[in-house]
Structures are given as C-alpha cells and as structure tokens.
Image (cartoon, rainbow, N blue to C red; front, side, top):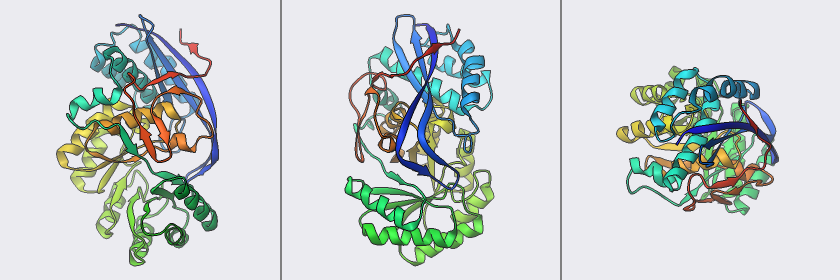
Length: 369
C-alpha cells in the first residue's frame, strides 16, 4: 500500500496552568500535526512539539525538515515495507528527531490500521504476553514557590493521582524545602519523583539528593540532575547517592542508551519519542534495556493526545517499561480529539481500536506538494 499524501497542520490547546521547569515556562500546547494517507484513503496521525531547549527543534525547523526532506523521500514508498520506509527517513536528514517522530507516529498508526490491530498489540509482538490495556501515569507539579507547589500537589492527589513528578532545579536548598513540604502535605503513601531538568551541577546534585535522603523524604528517583551532555557528571551523581537516577536528556539514541548502561552512568532510562525520532528507534532502546535488565520510563514532552497516545501504546507493549510519565492530556484544558486512549485522572485506558485509535483531528491541513 503506497504512501500517497502527507499534510501538515497546527493545533493550539491552552494548559490548565502554566508548565514551569528549570528550563522554560509554557502556557499552551502549540504543536505540528502530520497526516499521512495511503492510496486507499486510510489516514494516520502524528504530532511534534517544538522543544528547542531540549531537542533543538523549533516550529520552523520541524516543518522545514518534513516539507523539504522527509516527505519527498518517503512519498510513494510501500507502507508494507515499514523498515525500509523508516531507514529512508532516518538517512534523508540528520537529527531533527521531533520531525521524524511526528512522521514515525503517523506511519505506525497507518501500519497498525493496515493490520487491523491496535498499535500496542502490534508492538507487543516483540515482547509476547506483555500487552496491557491499563497504565498509571504520574502528574507533573511545576516548579513555583513552595506554597503553590504544595497546593498543586494536594489538588493532584485529590484528583486521584498517586504519583507526583515534582519539577525542581532552581536552587538546591530551596529544592529540598519544596520536596519536604510536599511530602509533609501529601503523606507517606504518595510516590514522589523529582525532576531537575538538568538544573544542577554534579556537586549541587549530590548535596541536594543526599539532603533529601538524610531527611527520609522517600524519593522514588531523581531525573536528569545534570546537563544531558555531562555523562561524567551523571555517572558521578549516580555513584554518590542511594536514590535511583533516571537519565532523560542524556538519552536520545540507542548509542546513548548503550553508553549509559555500559558505564553505569544512571540506573534508569526515560524514553521519549521526540528524542528517539519515534517508535522505531524507541523499540530498539527497549530491546537493549530488556537484555540488560534495565527498567525504563516512557515519558513525553509537552504534547497533546496524539503523540502521548503513541507513547502509551509503546508503554503498554514492553515489559521493560515499568513507569509512565504521560500526563500531557491531563495538563491540557480540553481534549479536542475523537477516539484514542481514555485519560481518566491517573489511568490511561487503551481500547481495541485499530492504530492509535484517534479518528479525528480538528485542524486545517495543507498537503505537501
């Protein structure tokens, strides 16, 4: 079945509250949507957020990569030869992982529809018996003044969330205070994950994490305490603390994951489709992690339901994935889509709809000529 049409559009969804990390503040999801059609009229959807501070991809660069390189390279190829299509996309332009992820997601959506299967069951063929129809996600607590973070945490618990991912990275001693007060407010049963978003030096990271350990704050993990480029610093932190360290911005590729595992630079790996370039390469990282018995999280950037649902299908399909940070739809003020997984507070419920399951994306598309 030939790939016939590739079209682009944009969706804008206001957030419930501003999303704040050590790197940025965002008020709405403003993402590119890809629509790919085969010659029989079947449609697949993908999505890419411009996250320049992490992936280096802007709105303009994502669109230019798809228009100028990816679309001309894969149009007319046979969808049934999916590996060949992915190889062509991978080699037609370097990097541009968010652009590749958007197209990859749309292609996998199409391919699963072609097979008449929900995507998670198709992906689970590499990991027999692991397909799940229910996931539990954490909810992100943006970095703010301590009092506001406590209120946001209590609100999340009131909505049924049992796992909080708390953003820090803006001052070590203040970060300890933030976590201390949140723990005091939510009690001992709530799981707290700490995400520094590269905000600490290695020395500050060790000092801050040890302070949390000394106070018995019960932190499940700390995500990307130092710069994503600082492998030595990441390894130093991992060796100096007892709390498990989750590598995020340090892992874009299979090669990055291999290095992290071989050097024992982190305990856990966060796989995000916008870093890997989509499901195709994310599967390779899952294969590696399973061989080495390394647990993984499937995370997301600030994405809406299309891209997050693709991540949910992958998370539901692989046994190495034991954690989900897929709260993008919960951060959005509305759900403009029809179909796809159902997001009920902390629960993500997958159905037997073919592909990703989303049947309508209410944006205006322009076909790439």
